[in-house]
Image (cartoon, rainbow, N blue to C red; front, side, top):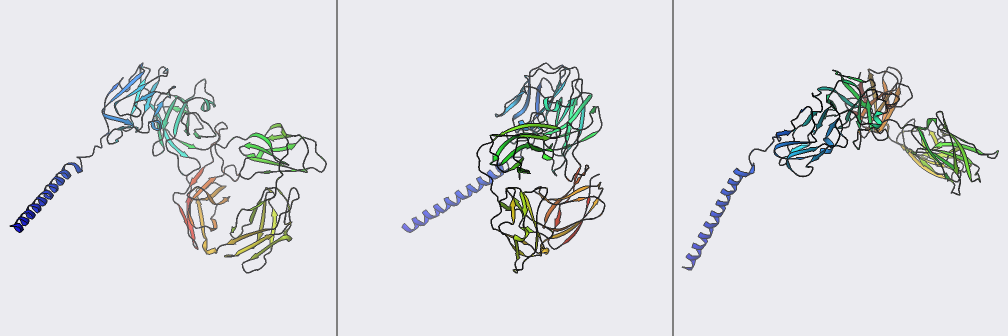
Amino acid sequence: MFLCGQLGGMKNTISNFILSITISLVLFQCANRGTAEGGPKDESPPKITKEEPANFSTNFKANEIRIYFDEYIKFKNLQKQLVVSPPMDPTPEITPLSAASKYITIKIYDTLQPNTTYAINFGESIIDNNEGNPFPFYKYVFSTGSYIDSLSVKGLVIEAFERETPESVSVLLHEVDSTYTDSIVFKQKPKYIGITDSLSEFSIDNIKAGSYLLTALKEENTNYIYQPKDDKFGYRSQFVTVPSDTAYVLKLFNQDPEFKFTRARQLAESRIGFAYEGIPDSLSVKLLSDVPDDFLSTTSKEFEKDTLNFWMNPKLDIDSLRFQVTYFSTKDTVTVRMKKMEKDSLTLKTVNSTLKPGDDMLLRSSIPLASVDMSKTSIIDKDSIAIESQFSIDENNRTLAKLNFDLTENNNYDITLFPGALKDFYGTENDTLRLRAGTKLLSDYGNIRVSLRNAKYPIILQFVTTNGDIKEEKIVRAQGPVDFINIDPGKYFLRAIFDTNDNGKYDSGNFLKKIQPERVSYAEELVEVRAFWEEFTEFILED
């Protein structure tokens, strides 16, 4: 009986367990059928049910607008996507910014211009609260006059120098009337505003007929006022007459800073620094104070700093020094107060230690160099063979010394500069300096021949890394293949700069001087340079 009772209890327990499992599976399957998918996902954007006043209203006099939706909505990146054209000052207040709502309120505080069409573009910032489906490119338009302006200006914005064009570039129209001057872009917001789409195309709509200055502006803090130090800018050289069927192309550029002398101050016992902004080609300095007959001076550009150094020898025991600073046609007289300071000490740094055939080994000096002595230089290769060398100072930059010697592949060089190998402006000689340099196997490099089509010479042809660094560069002045030898393996973009003024460098644009940036062209595909390999590529430049 006890055993049977146990068996009976076990059977009941097993039966109950199986029943529980079965019920759970059924419920799980039912739940799966009913809730796993939750029905079709809502992919529909919210719908507008009412606009007060109505969209595209004329003779508009309201100071508040309400747009109602069929479901709860919210904003996503409103500040980045909202464009009000013409701009209002102060900007409209749009609510709610953080909470979900079934309507949007737009409060207008600006005094609106008469007979003007306004457009409030939301981009894709309006989304439904549940799934985040955007209401695509909603625009509320109204006119303070009796009709809606319906003309437009369209086109494309491209980067003048870099390969990629920035996203969301503002495109501006300033009206050309009796009050127009070129300085308007630095002082006044535009009449109309558009913004580029994902393809860098733009369309400025709901504008009236007239003559306009067309510009493009990429700025960190959006205020539609051009600040050359911070912003990228592009402009059309001729005014735009609306209506127009032309698709305009604007090239964005960083304007080179205008040269400006900023200050002069003592930096060391016998060194004065003249700080500046821009390119210092036109800057020169002359000491006006009385000096002894044996006085010497020289200048040098400080490495990686916007400073021109004025070096003096011997030390002058004087309270102040007067200088004449000349740049372009401007002459300034400045006084520098002198005080007790440490004197500069000679230090030397290697610029390059991995060398290719034809390279010089470069040394950068902290003080301009006066002379070199080749007899106090020793170069020994990995086989302990002494190598003859030539030692010189760069005449265009006397803080740079060049050591030239025959290089062979896959070699190492021990270089010793004995005391007196270098002497600086103050007559100080170097201490013993030991350096190392080396070469790789020639088979570690690749060679490539480039054929140019549609070229207008001279052209600056560059190999640019994916990070934007210039790896190789040649100035090409005539038709024919261009050979690049011993290039480090890797993938590069080919870039061609049309060097219109033949100065050996890229020149950016300048709005006030009415200068457009020099033309730049990129190859469509990356060029791969492989070790121990010779390549040929054709570079078709854009017409």
